[in-house]
Length: 501
Image (tube, rainbow, N blue to C red; front, side):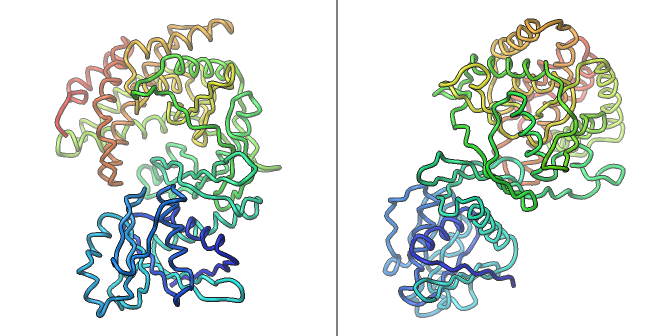
Protein backbone atom coordinates (compact mmCIF):
# COMPACT_ATOMS: atom_id res chain seq x y z
CA UNK A 1 0.00 0.00 0.00
CA UNK A 2 1.40 3.38 -1.06
CA UNK A 3 1.48 6.45 1.14
CA UNK A 4 1.88 10.24 0.97
CA UNK A 5 2.17 13.00 3.55
CA UNK A 6 1.24 16.67 3.40
CA UNK A 7 1.78 19.26 6.13
CA UNK A 8 -1.18 21.64 6.35
CA UNK A 9 -0.07 24.86 7.98
CA UNK A 10 -3.55 26.40 8.31
CA UNK A 11 -7.20 26.16 7.31
CA UNK A 12 -6.43 27.46 3.82
CA UNK A 13 -3.93 24.64 3.25
CA UNK A 14 -6.52 22.11 4.43
CA UNK A 15 -9.04 23.59 1.99
CA UNK A 16 -6.50 23.34 -0.83
CA UNK A 17 -6.01 19.66 -0.07
CA UNK A 18 -9.79 19.29 -0.35
CA UNK A 19 -9.64 20.90 -3.80
CA UNK A 20 -6.80 18.60 -4.83
CA UNK A 21 -8.83 15.56 -3.79
CA UNK A 22 -11.92 16.88 -5.59
CA UNK A 23 -10.02 17.20 -8.86
CA UNK A 24 -9.09 13.50 -8.71
CA UNK A 25 -12.46 12.11 -7.61
CA UNK A 26 -14.40 9.67 -9.81
CA UNK A 27 -17.64 7.72 -9.29
CA UNK A 28 -17.05 4.70 -7.06
CA UNK A 29 -14.21 6.31 -5.09
CA UNK A 30 -14.23 6.20 -1.28
CA UNK A 31 -12.27 8.69 0.81
CA UNK A 32 -12.04 7.62 4.45
CA UNK A 33 -11.37 10.65 6.69
CA UNK A 34 -9.85 9.65 10.01
CA UNK A 35 -8.89 11.86 12.93
CA UNK A 36 -9.86 13.05 16.38
CA UNK A 37 -12.54 15.66 16.99
CA UNK A 38 -11.29 19.00 15.69
CA UNK A 39 -8.64 17.40 13.48
CA UNK A 40 -10.08 19.05 10.35
CA UNK A 41 -12.13 16.29 8.76
CA UNK A 42 -15.18 18.48 8.24
CA UNK A 43 -13.06 21.35 6.93
CA UNK A 44 -11.48 19.03 4.39
CA UNK A 45 -14.81 17.50 3.35
CA UNK A 46 -16.47 20.92 3.04
CA UNK A 47 -13.71 22.23 0.76
CA UNK A 48 -13.86 19.11 -1.39
CA UNK A 49 -17.64 19.31 -1.84
CA UNK A 50 -17.55 23.04 -2.61
CA UNK A 51 -14.84 22.48 -5.21
CA UNK A 52 -16.92 19.75 -6.87
CA UNK A 53 -19.94 22.08 -6.87
CA UNK A 54 -17.82 25.07 -7.97
CA UNK A 55 -19.63 27.02 -5.25
CA UNK A 56 -17.42 28.43 -2.46
CA UNK A 57 -20.48 29.49 -0.49
CA UNK A 58 -22.33 26.17 -0.64
CA UNK A 59 -23.85 25.19 2.70
CA UNK A 60 -22.21 21.91 3.72
CA UNK A 61 -23.61 20.91 7.13
CA UNK A 62 -22.04 18.16 9.15
CA UNK A 63 -23.93 14.86 8.73
CA UNK A 64 -23.43 14.01 12.42
CA UNK A 65 -27.18 13.64 13.03
CA UNK A 66 -28.47 12.82 9.53
CA UNK A 67 -25.58 10.32 9.09
CA UNK A 68 -25.41 11.03 5.35
CA UNK A 69 -25.73 14.14 3.16
CA UNK A 70 -25.80 13.88 -0.64
CA UNK A 71 -24.76 16.53 -3.17
CA UNK A 72 -25.58 16.65 -6.88
CA UNK A 73 -22.17 17.92 -7.97
CA UNK A 74 -19.99 17.24 -11.05
CA UNK A 75 -19.27 13.87 -9.50
CA UNK A 76 -22.23 13.14 -7.17
CA UNK A 77 -20.81 12.87 -3.67
CA UNK A 78 -22.28 11.37 -0.50
CA UNK A 79 -20.91 12.54 2.86
CA UNK A 80 -21.21 9.91 5.60
CA UNK A 81 -20.58 10.39 9.32
CA UNK A 82 -20.40 7.01 11.04
CA UNK A 83 -19.73 8.31 14.57
CA UNK A 84 -23.17 7.28 15.83
CA UNK A 85 -23.16 3.80 14.26
CA UNK A 86 -23.49 1.06 16.86
CA UNK A 87 -22.25 -1.67 14.49
CA UNK A 88 -20.54 -1.88 11.10
CA UNK A 89 -23.57 -3.68 9.65
CA UNK A 90 -25.63 -0.49 9.91
CA UNK A 91 -23.71 1.07 7.02
CA UNK A 92 -25.83 -1.01 4.64
CA UNK A 93 -28.97 0.65 6.00
CA UNK A 94 -27.54 4.02 4.99
CA UNK A 95 -27.51 2.99 1.33
CA UNK A 96 -23.73 2.94 1.05
CA UNK A 97 -23.58 0.58 -1.96
CA UNK A 98 -26.24 2.56 -3.81
CA UNK A 99 -24.32 5.75 -3.11
CA UNK A 100 -21.18 4.29 -4.69
CA UNK A 101 -23.16 3.16 -7.73
CA UNK A 102 -24.22 6.79 -8.22
CA UNK A 103 -21.06 8.65 -7.24
CA UNK A 104 -18.30 8.91 -4.65
CA UNK A 105 -18.32 8.73 -0.86
CA UNK A 106 -16.62 10.70 1.91
CA UNK A 107 -16.63 8.75 5.14
CA UNK A 108 -15.86 10.33 8.51
CA UNK A 109 -15.07 7.96 11.39
CA UNK A 110 -14.36 5.06 8.99
CA UNK A 111 -13.07 2.91 11.85
CA UNK A 112 -16.74 2.37 12.84
CA UNK A 113 -17.24 0.53 9.54
CA UNK A 114 -14.38 -1.88 10.35
CA UNK A 115 -13.56 -3.89 7.23
CA UNK A 116 -16.77 -3.21 5.30
CA UNK A 117 -15.30 -0.36 3.23
CA UNK A 118 -13.85 -1.30 -0.19
CA UNK A 119 -10.19 -2.31 -0.29
CA UNK A 120 -9.62 0.49 -2.81
CA UNK A 121 -10.69 3.13 -0.26
CA UNK A 122 -8.21 5.94 0.28
CA UNK A 123 -7.44 6.58 3.93
CA UNK A 124 -6.73 10.19 4.88
CA UNK A 125 -5.59 10.49 8.49
CA UNK A 126 -5.37 13.97 10.04
CA UNK A 127 -3.30 14.61 13.16
CA UNK A 128 -2.16 17.74 14.93
CA UNK A 129 1.45 18.72 14.30
CA UNK A 130 2.67 21.90 15.92
CA UNK A 131 0.43 24.77 14.88
CA UNK A 132 -0.84 22.85 11.89
CA UNK A 133 -1.95 19.41 10.78
CA UNK A 134 -0.32 16.44 9.12
CA UNK A 135 -2.33 14.58 6.49
CA UNK A 136 -1.28 11.00 5.83
CA UNK A 137 -2.80 9.48 2.69
CA UNK A 138 -2.63 5.77 1.90
CA UNK A 139 -4.29 3.46 -0.59
CA UNK A 140 -3.85 1.34 -3.67
CA UNK A 141 -5.10 1.10 -7.21
CA UNK A 142 -6.27 3.64 -9.77
CA UNK A 143 -8.03 5.92 -7.27
CA UNK A 144 -4.88 6.41 -5.20
CA UNK A 145 -2.81 6.95 -8.35
CA UNK A 146 -5.21 9.74 -9.37
CA UNK A 147 -4.91 11.33 -5.92
CA UNK A 148 -1.12 11.14 -6.05
CA UNK A 149 -1.11 12.76 -9.50
CA UNK A 150 -3.41 15.54 -8.33
CA UNK A 151 -1.09 16.27 -5.40
CA UNK A 152 1.85 16.30 -7.81
CA UNK A 153 -0.04 18.90 -9.83
CA UNK A 154 -0.31 21.06 -6.71
CA UNK A 155 3.45 20.68 -6.22
CA UNK A 156 3.94 21.80 -9.82
CA UNK A 157 1.81 24.88 -9.12
CA UNK A 158 3.98 25.64 -6.09
CA UNK A 159 7.11 25.51 -8.25
CA UNK A 160 5.44 27.87 -10.74
CA UNK A 161 4.58 30.38 -7.98
CA UNK A 162 0.90 29.42 -8.09
CA UNK A 163 0.79 27.11 -5.09
CA UNK A 164 -2.10 28.98 -3.44
CA UNK A 165 -4.24 29.01 -6.60
CA UNK A 166 -7.81 27.78 -6.55
CA UNK A 167 -8.38 24.75 -8.79
CA UNK A 168 -11.61 24.06 -10.66
CA UNK A 169 -12.38 21.38 -13.22
CA UNK A 170 -12.55 22.81 -16.75
CA UNK A 171 -12.88 20.08 -19.34
CA UNK A 172 -11.72 16.61 -20.30
CA UNK A 173 -11.61 14.98 -23.71
CA UNK A 174 -11.76 11.56 -25.30
CA UNK A 175 -8.13 10.95 -24.29
CA UNK A 176 -6.60 10.78 -20.80
CA UNK A 177 -5.90 14.53 -20.85
CA UNK A 178 -7.81 16.90 -18.58
CA UNK A 179 -7.80 20.61 -17.91
CA UNK A 180 -8.50 22.84 -14.92
CA UNK A 181 -8.99 26.56 -14.44
CA UNK A 182 -6.61 27.87 -11.77
CA UNK A 183 -7.18 31.28 -10.21
CA UNK A 184 -4.83 33.43 -8.12
CA UNK A 185 -5.55 36.91 -6.81
CA UNK A 186 -3.95 39.59 -8.95
CA UNK A 187 -3.60 37.45 -12.08
CA UNK A 188 -5.80 36.46 -14.99
CA UNK A 189 -7.00 32.83 -14.65
CA UNK A 190 -4.79 30.21 -16.28
CA UNK A 191 -5.28 26.64 -17.46
CA UNK A 192 -3.60 23.70 -15.76
CA UNK A 193 -3.11 20.97 -18.34
CA UNK A 194 -2.75 17.37 -17.17
CA UNK A 195 -1.32 15.28 -20.00
CA UNK A 196 -0.02 11.91 -18.78
CA UNK A 197 2.26 9.95 -21.07
CA UNK A 198 0.27 7.94 -23.57
CA UNK A 199 -0.25 4.25 -22.80
CA UNK A 200 0.49 2.63 -26.13
CA UNK A 201 -1.65 -0.49 -25.81
CA UNK A 202 -1.19 -3.90 -27.44
CA UNK A 203 0.18 -4.49 -30.95
CA UNK A 204 -2.51 -4.37 -33.64
CA UNK A 205 -0.54 -4.55 -36.88
CA UNK A 206 3.02 -5.55 -37.78
CA UNK A 207 3.89 -5.73 -34.08
CA UNK A 208 3.01 -2.06 -33.53
CA UNK A 209 0.29 -0.53 -31.32
CA UNK A 210 -2.39 1.66 -32.87
CA UNK A 211 -0.98 4.92 -31.47
CA UNK A 212 2.41 4.39 -33.12
CA UNK A 213 0.88 3.67 -36.52
CA UNK A 214 -1.54 6.62 -36.28
CA UNK A 215 1.26 8.87 -34.94
CA UNK A 216 -0.67 9.93 -31.85
CA UNK A 217 1.30 12.24 -29.55
CA UNK A 218 2.96 10.23 -26.79
CA UNK A 219 3.88 13.03 -24.39
CA UNK A 220 3.23 16.68 -23.61
CA UNK A 221 6.47 17.58 -25.41
CA UNK A 222 4.56 17.45 -28.70
CA UNK A 223 2.13 20.11 -27.48
CA UNK A 224 4.97 22.35 -26.28
CA UNK A 225 6.87 22.17 -29.56
CA UNK A 226 3.88 22.66 -31.85
CA UNK A 227 2.32 25.35 -29.66
CA UNK A 228 5.50 27.45 -29.64
CA UNK A 229 5.98 27.04 -33.39
CA UNK A 230 2.41 28.11 -34.12
CA UNK A 231 2.71 31.09 -31.78
CA UNK A 232 5.82 32.25 -33.61
CA UNK A 233 3.92 31.80 -36.89
CA UNK A 234 1.12 34.18 -35.94
CA UNK A 235 -1.47 31.71 -34.65
CA UNK A 236 -3.15 32.53 -31.33
CA UNK A 237 -2.36 29.46 -29.27
CA UNK A 238 -1.86 29.50 -25.47
CA UNK A 239 1.34 30.97 -24.08
CA UNK A 240 3.09 28.40 -21.88
CA UNK A 241 3.90 29.90 -18.47
CA UNK A 242 5.42 26.80 -16.83
CA UNK A 243 6.03 23.19 -17.75
CA UNK A 244 7.00 19.84 -16.29
CA UNK A 245 7.69 17.76 -19.35
CA UNK A 246 8.55 14.63 -17.41
CA UNK A 247 5.26 14.47 -15.52
CA UNK A 248 3.13 16.02 -18.26
CA UNK A 249 1.97 19.22 -16.56
CA UNK A 250 1.61 22.64 -18.20
CA UNK A 251 0.43 25.98 -16.87
CA UNK A 252 -0.84 27.85 -19.90
CA UNK A 253 -2.74 30.94 -20.94
CA UNK A 254 -6.53 30.79 -20.70
CA UNK A 255 -7.74 31.93 -24.12
CA UNK A 256 -11.40 32.18 -23.11
CA UNK A 257 -14.56 30.09 -23.14
CA UNK A 258 -16.76 31.44 -25.93
CA UNK A 259 -17.30 28.95 -28.71
CA UNK A 260 -18.75 28.75 -32.20
CA UNK A 261 -22.42 28.13 -31.35
CA UNK A 262 -25.22 30.58 -30.69
CA UNK A 263 -27.59 30.48 -27.73
CA UNK A 264 -29.64 27.74 -29.39
CA UNK A 265 -26.66 25.48 -30.05
CA UNK A 266 -26.55 26.33 -33.74
CA UNK A 267 -23.28 27.05 -35.59
CA UNK A 268 -22.47 30.71 -36.21
CA UNK A 269 -21.51 30.74 -39.89
CA UNK A 270 -19.32 33.83 -39.66
CA UNK A 271 -17.11 32.23 -37.01
CA UNK A 272 -16.59 29.08 -39.04
CA UNK A 273 -15.72 31.26 -42.05
CA UNK A 274 -13.17 33.16 -39.94
CA UNK A 275 -11.62 29.86 -38.85
CA UNK A 276 -11.42 28.78 -42.50
CA UNK A 277 -9.57 32.01 -43.31
CA UNK A 278 -7.13 31.28 -40.48
CA UNK A 279 -6.47 27.87 -42.03
CA UNK A 280 -5.88 29.53 -45.39
CA UNK A 281 -3.26 31.77 -43.78
CA UNK A 282 -1.58 28.80 -42.13
CA UNK A 283 -1.60 26.79 -45.35
CA UNK A 284 0.18 29.60 -47.12
CA UNK A 285 3.17 29.20 -44.80
CA UNK A 286 5.99 26.68 -44.77
CA UNK A 287 6.19 24.81 -41.48
CA UNK A 288 9.17 22.78 -40.23
CA UNK A 289 8.81 19.09 -39.46
CA UNK A 290 11.24 19.43 -36.56
CA UNK A 291 10.23 21.80 -33.79
CA UNK A 292 12.05 22.78 -30.62
CA UNK A 293 10.70 21.49 -27.30
CA UNK A 294 13.59 22.86 -25.23
CA UNK A 295 17.13 23.90 -26.06
CA UNK A 296 18.70 20.95 -27.87
CA UNK A 297 15.48 18.89 -27.74
CA UNK A 298 13.40 18.54 -30.92
CA UNK A 299 9.98 17.11 -31.69
CA UNK A 300 9.69 15.37 -35.05
CA UNK A 301 6.31 16.06 -36.65
CA UNK A 302 5.36 12.79 -38.30
CA UNK A 303 3.78 12.50 -41.78
CA UNK A 304 0.13 11.59 -42.17
CA UNK A 305 1.22 8.66 -44.28
CA UNK A 306 -0.72 5.81 -45.89
CA UNK A 307 -0.38 3.55 -42.85
CA UNK A 308 -1.79 6.26 -40.55
CA UNK A 309 -4.69 6.99 -42.89
CA UNK A 310 -5.56 3.32 -43.23
CA UNK A 311 -5.31 2.38 -39.55
CA UNK A 312 -7.73 5.24 -38.82
CA UNK A 313 -10.12 4.25 -41.62
CA UNK A 314 -10.01 0.67 -40.32
CA UNK A 315 -11.78 1.81 -37.16
CA UNK A 316 -14.98 1.68 -39.19
CA UNK A 317 -14.64 -2.04 -39.94
CA UNK A 318 -13.13 -2.83 -36.54
CA UNK A 319 -15.90 -1.20 -34.46
CA UNK A 320 -18.75 0.26 -36.50
CA UNK A 321 -19.39 -2.75 -38.74
CA UNK A 322 -19.73 -5.25 -35.84
CA UNK A 323 -22.18 -2.90 -34.11
CA UNK A 324 -24.11 -2.43 -37.35
CA UNK A 325 -24.29 -6.08 -38.41
CA UNK A 326 -23.89 -7.99 -35.15
CA UNK A 327 -20.79 -9.83 -36.38
CA UNK A 328 -17.16 -9.07 -37.30
CA UNK A 329 -16.37 -8.14 -40.91
CA UNK A 330 -15.42 -11.02 -43.18
CA UNK A 331 -11.93 -11.25 -44.60
CA UNK A 332 -13.40 -10.58 -48.04
CA UNK A 333 -15.14 -7.42 -46.86
CA UNK A 334 -12.01 -6.13 -45.15
CA UNK A 335 -9.92 -6.81 -48.27
CA UNK A 336 -12.47 -5.06 -50.46
CA UNK A 337 -12.53 -2.12 -48.08
CA UNK A 338 -8.74 -1.81 -48.22
CA UNK A 339 -8.68 -2.04 -52.01
CA UNK A 340 -11.31 0.66 -52.36
CA UNK A 341 -9.55 2.97 -49.92
CA UNK A 342 -6.08 2.46 -51.37
CA UNK A 343 -7.37 3.37 -54.84
CA UNK A 344 -8.81 6.61 -53.43
CA UNK A 345 -5.71 7.51 -51.42
CA UNK A 346 -3.59 7.09 -54.55
CA UNK A 347 -5.35 10.19 -55.86
CA UNK A 348 -3.76 12.36 -53.14
CA UNK A 349 -0.39 12.25 -54.89
CA UNK A 350 0.62 15.75 -55.85
CA UNK A 351 -1.82 17.49 -53.50
CA UNK A 352 -0.52 20.09 -51.04
CA UNK A 353 0.83 18.81 -47.74
CA UNK A 354 1.26 21.14 -44.78
CA UNK A 355 0.99 21.22 -41.00
CA UNK A 356 -2.44 19.74 -40.21
CA UNK A 357 -3.69 20.10 -36.65
CA UNK A 358 -5.89 17.00 -37.02
CA UNK A 359 -8.69 18.13 -34.69
CA UNK A 360 -9.37 21.62 -35.98
CA UNK A 361 -13.06 21.86 -35.07
CA UNK A 362 -15.28 23.98 -32.87
CA UNK A 363 -14.52 22.36 -29.46
CA UNK A 364 -10.86 23.28 -29.96
CA UNK A 365 -11.30 26.87 -31.20
CA UNK A 366 -12.11 29.81 -28.93
CA UNK A 367 -13.97 32.86 -30.27
CA UNK A 368 -12.57 36.19 -29.03
CA UNK A 369 -14.87 38.78 -30.55
CA UNK A 370 -13.19 41.72 -28.86
CA UNK A 371 -10.09 41.16 -31.02
CA UNK A 372 -9.48 41.60 -34.72
CA UNK A 373 -8.29 39.50 -37.64
CA UNK A 374 -6.94 36.02 -36.97
CA UNK A 375 -6.41 36.93 -33.32
CA UNK A 376 -10.15 36.48 -32.83
CA UNK A 377 -9.49 32.73 -32.94
CA UNK A 378 -7.74 30.97 -30.09
CA UNK A 379 -6.59 27.47 -31.01
CA UNK A 380 -6.06 24.68 -28.47
CA UNK A 381 -5.41 20.91 -28.58
CA UNK A 382 -2.58 20.96 -31.11
CA UNK A 383 -0.39 18.10 -29.87
CA UNK A 384 -1.45 15.56 -32.52
CA UNK A 385 -0.46 17.73 -35.50
CA UNK A 386 1.09 15.95 -38.48
CA UNK A 387 2.38 16.89 -41.92
CA UNK A 388 -0.42 15.94 -44.30
CA UNK A 389 -3.03 17.12 -46.80
CA UNK A 390 -4.09 20.74 -46.31
CA UNK A 391 -7.68 19.72 -47.01
CA UNK A 392 -7.88 17.56 -43.86
CA UNK A 393 -8.30 20.42 -41.38
CA UNK A 394 -10.79 22.15 -43.67
CA UNK A 395 -12.87 18.96 -43.66
CA UNK A 396 -12.54 18.72 -39.88
CA UNK A 397 -13.86 22.27 -39.55
CA UNK A 398 -16.60 22.28 -42.20
CA UNK A 399 -17.96 18.86 -41.14
CA UNK A 400 -17.72 19.41 -37.39
CA UNK A 401 -18.25 16.05 -35.69
CA UNK A 402 -20.17 17.50 -32.73
CA UNK A 403 -22.16 20.23 -34.51
CA UNK A 404 -24.73 19.83 -37.26
CA UNK A 405 -23.26 21.77 -40.15
CA UNK A 406 -25.92 22.24 -42.81
CA UNK A 407 -24.80 21.91 -46.45
CA UNK A 408 -25.19 25.70 -46.70
CA UNK A 409 -22.86 26.47 -43.78
CA UNK A 410 -20.42 23.81 -44.96
CA UNK A 411 -20.38 25.52 -48.38
CA UNK A 412 -19.91 28.97 -46.82
CA UNK A 413 -16.96 27.66 -44.81
CA UNK A 414 -15.38 26.15 -47.92
CA UNK A 415 -16.00 29.31 -49.93
CA UNK A 416 -14.28 31.42 -47.27
CA UNK A 417 -11.22 29.16 -47.37
CA UNK A 418 -11.07 29.07 -51.18
CA UNK A 419 -11.47 32.84 -51.47
CA UNK A 420 -8.65 33.44 -48.98
CA UNK A 421 -6.34 31.00 -50.80
CA UNK A 422 -7.09 32.62 -54.16
CA UNK A 423 -6.43 36.08 -52.73
CA UNK A 424 -3.01 34.92 -51.55
CA UNK A 425 -1.91 33.59 -54.97
CA UNK A 426 -2.37 30.69 -57.36
CA UNK A 427 -4.74 28.02 -56.07
CA UNK A 428 -6.10 24.91 -57.78
CA UNK A 429 -9.69 24.70 -56.54
CA UNK A 430 -10.47 21.44 -58.36
CA UNK A 431 -7.54 19.59 -56.78
CA UNK A 432 -8.41 21.00 -53.37
CA UNK A 433 -12.08 19.98 -53.70
CA UNK A 434 -11.04 16.42 -54.56
CA UNK A 435 -8.65 16.21 -51.60
CA UNK A 436 -11.35 17.71 -49.36
CA UNK A 437 -13.79 14.96 -50.31
CA UNK A 438 -11.19 12.23 -49.74
CA UNK A 439 -10.14 13.58 -46.35
CA UNK A 440 -13.75 14.15 -45.28
CA UNK A 441 -14.59 10.55 -46.16
CA UNK A 442 -11.53 9.23 -44.34
CA UNK A 443 -12.14 11.34 -41.23
CA UNK A 444 -15.83 10.55 -40.95
CA UNK A 445 -15.21 6.83 -41.48
CA UNK A 446 -12.71 6.99 -38.64
CA UNK A 447 -15.12 8.91 -36.40
CA UNK A 448 -17.91 6.36 -36.90
CA UNK A 449 -15.51 3.75 -35.54
CA UNK A 450 -14.17 5.94 -32.73
CA UNK A 451 -17.61 6.88 -31.41
CA UNK A 452 -18.67 3.22 -31.30
CA UNK A 453 -15.37 2.31 -29.62
CA UNK A 454 -15.94 4.99 -26.99
CA UNK A 455 -19.27 3.35 -26.19
CA UNK A 456 -18.20 -0.29 -26.35
CA UNK A 457 -14.71 -0.12 -24.87
CA UNK A 458 -14.75 3.01 -22.74
CA UNK A 459 -18.33 3.09 -21.45
CA UNK A 460 -19.21 6.46 -23.00
CA UNK A 461 -22.56 5.87 -24.74
CA UNK A 462 -23.34 9.56 -25.27
CA UNK A 463 -21.09 9.60 -28.35
CA UNK A 464 -23.59 7.40 -30.22
CA UNK A 465 -26.02 10.31 -30.57
CA UNK A 466 -23.61 11.83 -33.11
CA UNK A 467 -23.70 8.85 -35.51
CA UNK A 468 -26.56 10.07 -37.75
CA UNK A 469 -24.72 13.34 -38.31
CA UNK A 470 -21.48 11.56 -39.19
CA UNK A 471 -23.27 9.27 -41.65
CA UNK A 472 -24.76 12.36 -43.34
CA UNK A 473 -21.30 13.92 -43.61
CA UNK A 474 -19.99 10.68 -45.08
CA UNK A 475 -22.73 10.67 -47.73
CA UNK A 476 -21.82 14.25 -48.67
CA UNK A 477 -18.13 13.43 -49.00
CA UNK A 478 -18.71 10.28 -51.05
CA UNK A 479 -20.86 12.22 -53.53
CA UNK A 480 -17.67 13.54 -55.20
CA UNK A 481 -17.09 11.80 -58.56
CA UNK A 482 -13.53 10.83 -57.59
CA UNK A 483 -14.94 8.63 -54.82
CA UNK A 484 -17.52 6.78 -56.94
CA UNK A 485 -15.97 3.32 -56.43
CA UNK A 486 -15.60 3.85 -52.70
CA UNK A 487 -19.21 5.06 -52.53
CA UNK A 488 -20.37 1.94 -54.34
CA UNK A 489 -18.57 -0.22 -51.75
CA UNK A 490 -20.19 1.64 -48.83
CA UNK A 491 -23.64 1.40 -50.43
CA UNK A 492 -23.26 -2.31 -51.22
CA UNK A 493 -22.45 -3.06 -47.58
CA UNK A 494 -25.06 -0.75 -46.06
CA UNK A 495 -22.44 1.36 -44.30
CA UNK A 496 -24.37 4.63 -44.58
CA UNK A 497 -27.84 3.32 -43.85
CA UNK A 498 -29.84 4.61 -40.89
CA UNK A 499 -30.31 1.67 -38.52
CA UNK A 500 -31.33 1.23 -34.95
CA UNK A 501 -28.12 0.57 -33.04
